[in-house]
Image (tube, rainbow, N blue to C red; front, side):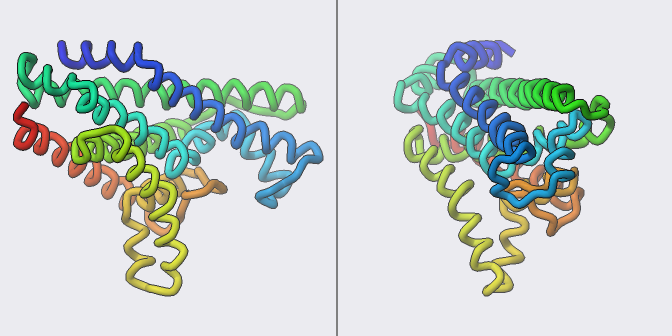
Amino acid sequence: MGSVKAELLRLWKWPATWVMIGVWLVMTLTFGYVFNYLALNGGTNTRDLSQQQLISAMQPENVGAAVVRGLPMFGGAIILVLAALAVGSGYGWGTWKTTLTAGPRRVSAMAGTLGALGIIVVVLVALTFVVDLGAAVVVASVEGWDWSLPGFDAVKALGASLLIAAMWTGFGVFLGVVTKGPALSVGLGLMWAIVTENLLRGVGSLLGPVESLTEVLPGGSAGNLAGAVGGSGAPGVLNDLSGTTAALFLVGYVVVFVGAATLLKVRRDLV
């Protein structure tokens, strides 16, 4: 717990943490509500959604879907960057060397970082839900719609959001430990989350085995889980796997990424 508190204090006072959270909240509001509201009132409808689809996407009872639909790609990329920076920066600053030399055991130090990142991710998802709910209530009230508060579907969507966010966090931690620096880990993570998997899906229709592979890759699994809980209509959201199958793959990725990162930290980073 001491390691978690120390690492959480560092992340809490680190400007990059709040910059990443702020960027994500602005993105989810802009793409989830501002653009849809403008399209509903005569603006450009770039996604060719019907009026009913636009209204449904902004209803307060559908806030859970609004939260989860952005996490398979853009939200996941932001979480990955935050985790990679949190771990990778310790190599450049020399704080990992100090911690591993004079601080707690390596496993405890790694657990502290993972625990602190987990708390930050929970805060991020909770803030996203609160901000989106506030925006949805404002839009519904201004437009005079009949609306209700989110129900059990929102609970499922938030659970899926936390699992997706945990996978991207583990991926970022793994890249930060493997590359031993923030710049390369962030670059590799963004390339994978935004470019590589999308390119593979693009050629998947021509190559059958590749198409099947993309369904179970980290981003594909996240997209399928988001699609299973109602987060349709956003980049990266898929409907190729069942929600249970996608969730199992995500749990597996969390275990692999966190386990591999911890093993490297214990066996390789001697000082």
